[in-house]
Each structure stands twice: as structure tokens, then as C-alpha cells.
Length: 518
Ligand code: ADP
Ligand code: GLC
Image (cartoon, rainbow, N blue to C red; front, side):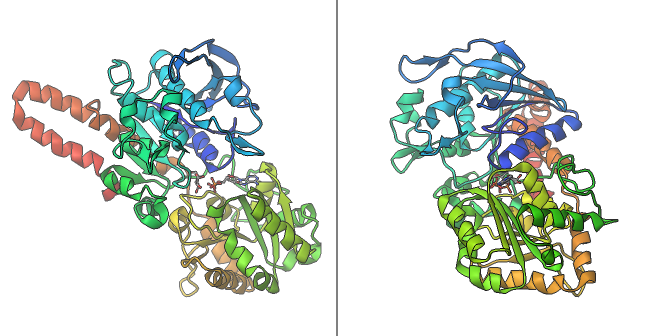
């Protein structure tokens, strides 16, 4: 099958968060399973392209306005074809989504152009059997295919799978955006993309895609509730029969302590000795003394956003630091959290190391050098770091939400099973309790090694998730009448009338409901 990914970020070209990891790894895994995959990304400032595929594409915006992005070729990497939408006025900027003063005010225009260009790529450059779109920035692909492109013989039936990586980001704009980006006014209604008097692009993806996915089973349940749905839980519930939760995987080519060139020493489940060398290097890099080598070291690598639960750390910071531990934090984002961690480092010099930075090599070093990895998220659609941590023998302490709940099993001392420590209630006390449990078990070397090995031997590769996505692409083709079952039905219907059609309908239902059975 030919799958065209449209996403606002993807490694190795652009990244602000886990979406970029997914957009790199899932296409590779699909190619390994025999599919053809192309990925369309914006050409941002740092993105290098190798050739021009189309020097000028005509993209209608609102009114009589047109834009003329080029389509650049980003070469073939691990069998995946890359295309970039190249419009320097829109994408050659300091940040991906915003600068020092916040989100760019023309984000609706930028990503509307991007979505139209992705559709045009499928028409003129790389015909797709199915689109796979990600988050609000690409939500206009299904909206446009079923409205403005509704009569286009080339793409009107191309199915769309839309993945929700984060319900907290809506792409919310004022009503005039319809005119500014050239969307039909008819979309402005509660069953369309209207949302409390404004325009909500994420909602467009939720309403118009053939299938919805999100990045863990637990989060698929959570977003159907008011607590996690950010006002869109009703829309998600309405589409509940087309929503599937598929936990993200790990790209073990990039995240594996046996092969990782970014860490001080390689190690494995068979021989963990290199991990101590990594811990030593980590202490050095954060200006902490080697005296701490035997103390438990808790690591954090994160975007600093409300989602990540750092207010719990703020609430219990001093009680936490009363424990015999060392804390290392790498992250950037909201000012209040940067200030929080800077203040902690100042209050506990020599015991708290903080780097306010985005640094991939350092992220690997924290994963390898820490003993525990803390993710107290308020919500976490999937989360990748906790799964990276497992592979590095770094025991996760997580809140039981979304993908954190799906990927981490609580340690059970009686049976020696489990991979980490979890707390459920969103409270500082619950967090503290889980940390203390981890610290307690750290004291017993034998038990600690058991927990580490339980995690290191887990397999969270992309193989399983990629196969699930492939089934879903097939199901999406079926519901658009393009898949094998539907085609057989058509032929059978023509040959033998209504009787067979019934039978095929039930086959179709079986295909669609695979996720509930598996
Ligand atoms: P989210 O996408 O919500 O930020 P994930 O856990 O899915 O959370 O993915 C985060 C990704 O970004 C991981 O690959 C992580 O290593 C990386 N990352 C986050 N913050 C930093 C940072 N300050 N420096 C380097 N990498 C970071
Ligand atoms: C989002 C989520 C994160 C998830 C990532 C990739 O940024 O916050 O939990 O792992 O997308 O799907």
C-alpha cells in the first residue's frame, strides 16, 4: 500500500516533541513491512532539501489570494521518500510554531497552505492509497478532501487516518479564518469545525477523517471524558466506533544502550557495568560530585508544559529533596517551569543539576546515567521517554495516565514482576509516595536489578504498532469502498444481486472492529 504521511514535524528534519520521533520511526517500520511511504513536511529553516520537484504550486487561499510554494525533494531515507513544502515566507522562521512572543499569528494560513500542498502532492507527484495525518496542523487534509476536493476524481475518495497526538492543542482561530484560508462557510456549524463561536481545526480532523487513532489505548478512553477531552470529548465519543488506540513504539536504532554512540559507555541487560560510567559522566556534565555515585539519581527530560505535571514537583519540592537523592533536569518551555527548576538548583546546590536547553545528545546521557526517570504527567497521550528509560535500565516513576499507564507495570515485590512505579491520583502526596517506594527498593541491589532487567527485556519496537496501522489503513480503504472486501462486494453484487452483499457487509464490520478483538 502507498501511504502518504502529512505532519508538521519529523526527524531527522525538524522536532519539538515526540511527534517528530513517531513521524520518523513509523514510516520506516511500515517500509520494513513492505509498504511504500512518503512523508510531507514543511521546509523549516534548518531543513535541507536535495532537489526541486515542482518549482511552483498554485495554492488558493481566501478571496483572490494565491500562494506559490515549491515542492522540494528531501531524498530517500531508510526507504522513506520525503517531500517538503517550501514557502520561505511561511516556514523559514526562527521556530516551528512560534517565536519569542508566542505562536505565529498566521499559523492557520501556514498550515492551510501546507495541507493543500500535501493533497496536490498526492495528485501530481506521489499518488497515495491513503493519507495519514497528525494533529491539528494537518487536520484540513480530510476536511478539504471531503469538501473543496469533493468532486476531484483523483483524490475525492482517498481515505484519511487521522492521529491525535495531543488533545491539548486545538488549532483554535477566530471565525474570519475561514475567509482567510479559503474554507467553505458551510463548515461553520456545530457538526463541522465551529467550536464556541470560533474555528477549531482539530475538530475538523475528528469529524472528517475515516479513522481516528490516538497513541495509547488508555488515552483513547480518556479523551472521551470531559477531564481529558478539552471540550472535544463529545465529538470523540460520537466517533467512538472509528477510534483506535495504538501505543507508540521505540526506534531501537536510535535508543539502545548497546549501540548508543551518544553515551559514555555501552551496556546491556547482560552487563550493566557501563551504566555506572554513564552516571559518572552525567554527574560531571551537570556539575555534581562523584560522591553521589552510590545515591539514587532521578532524571527528567521534558518539554516544560502544564501537561507534564511539574506543578506536583513544585508542591513537594522540599519534601522530595529531604530524601537522599540527586536530581538532574533537562528541558525547555514555559517560563514558570524553567524558573521552578532554576530555583531548585539554587536551593540545593550540588544535589540538583539543571540544564534549560534542548539537546538530543544530553537527553541520551540522562536516559543512560540516571537510575530513575520521573514523568508525573497530568496527561500523557503516549510518552516516549518512559519507554526509552526501560531500555536503558532507568526505572520509570510515572503517573498512571495515557501511554504511561499502558507501558509501565507497577513493581510487585512478592512476584518480582513489574517495570516501574506508578501513582494514580494527581496529587503531590501520591507522587511523593511513588518516589519513596522507588527509593526504598533502590536500597536492595538485587531487587533493583530485577526491576531494571524486567524493563530492559521488554519489547516496545514499532513492529506491532506498524502492523496495526497497516490494518487500519486497509479498513479505511474498505469504508471508502476501495479495499479488497468492498471491491469483491461490488463484483459479487453485480454478479449475484443482494444476497452476497450482506455477507460482505459483515466481513467489512469484522475488519473494522479488529482493534476491539486484538
Ligand atoms: P512530548 O511529545 O509530549 O514532548 P514524548 O515523551 O512523546 O513527549 O516525546 C518527547 C521527545 O522529545 C523525546 O524524544 C525526548 O527525548 C525529547 N525531548 C524533550 N525535551 C527535550 C530536551 N530538552 N532536549 C532533548 N530532547 C528532548
Ligand atoms: C505528543 C504527546 C506524547 C506523545 C507524542 C507522540 O506530543 O504529548 O505523549 O508521545 O505526541 O505521539
